[in-house]
Length: 284
View (cartoon, rainbow, N blue to C red):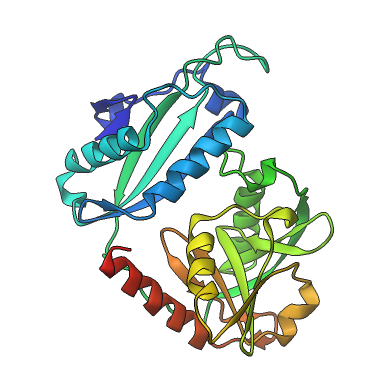
């Protein structure tokens, strides 16, 4: 069952109109959330990122689009899929509705849909990483700006970058901006570890304003064992790093095993992951 503007429908019945602007122009936003035992991880962060993104795209926000409204609709969708009750991945999609060319016919009636998929684990796991290989994706570059930080439906670079990775037997690729700085992985934010220093690209470089990125930064800023810095990352720094890892809300932390001939450890990533799970278990 999927949730289509509040109505629960069989997947076969939930069909988008060909005039849907998310389909025609990528005029849509989405949030990917993790739900465990009826609790939506980082709901407030997801909600405020969505509202901020809607304002940037000049979407009118209906009065009923409150955090409580989306929480209720997400949990309603989970309950309609009983096998997903313990742990689920949610995609909440908001688009500008139907009609118009580049100029919308009506900007006041955004629509939403919610799709759930089962997840195996309740909390974040330490994933295998030794065979997790990455390289730079240099066919296209991201131009930094407000739009580059949005989780919008325009993910062409991520799509063709993923195809490139598969064609070259890579697990992932690192994306660069027009200044040739590394900004993120294809599916999450990037962190670089060198000794006790941890660096992640700043939002000004064009990376996604990731919810998990925010959680990791919060953990690190309160940890005296690490020095955290938001600063540009040059490709040359990859060869000197001790660890690299990618973060997103579904996987948590994915350590990178190698970049070209350079191999990495995952000691710091495991430490951070354990602290993240401890925070989640305490419900903070």
